[in-house]
Image (cartoon, rainbow, N blue to C red):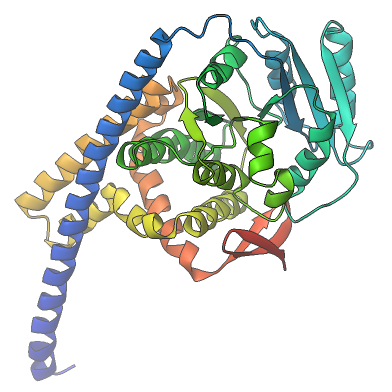
Length: 400
């Protein structure tokens, strides 16, 4: 390369560096602003939770059917089953387990549960039909006719709950027009780095985003799969579970449809736990991409802005582009301070997730992966779910 060509190239590289520097700085500033909004959202949620706890819902304990679709055996599944059996609930409740085949190994675990808790109404419902691409919702549609009560609670097979879970989840139904109650959750990591990164993301990214959306949108208008408490009447108003059998984000969509139908959706301060498997890198990537593409498909406008929430990679880019200038290090320090504050406020303060303290050092890595999956989610509409490949089209699943 000649001296003349170098002299021509240098100004171009210098200009490009300045452009990258300015863009990275602006995105970092936007990420810091988002972090401050997340802190305000967390504060508002805590305030509202304390106010709700003072409301007198004593004596309100309707009968409730807990619907749990199951497939296979997870490491902490039985502990989750047991936590539902030791509820301190004044009303009647029953546990219904929906299973596609009686050859499933989960059948033995349910039989064991019925032996250990003979005083409870625990039933197994075989769901042999596949009504749509979403097998879980297909099972729920076949389980619902067997539910004895008007109020129903749906959660995943491995969800671990507190003894006051049913009391707190059903309390908002004492208020008129409550159509859905959902709850925050934490992920219990199974030990691998990838499992820990996902659990950290749930407590410090995902739930922070939920609380921010709640603040900005004047309430929550979607559901979380950790708990979907509703009524048969409200479900019928949106076409029942059958209307959701082709949806990937069925929990989100249920809340959206109930909100549009005029029902209130409530997020109550009752934290449950789910298991995050011991992922390999491939399994981690497939799950994160499915999650990212599902969110992108559900909240297209809001998802575009999600990229700025990963503030640490942008602030590091500003440091590199500026050649390590003093202002860029100051900006990075501020970004790190806000990011850690959100992680501690939401992950530890609200969710009581001790794993956040253990894995706080992984926050920069978590943000880098988050930004990577956000960008990669736009590359395709294909998701992998339980080993099957589907194409997403406006929330609907089409088998590939």
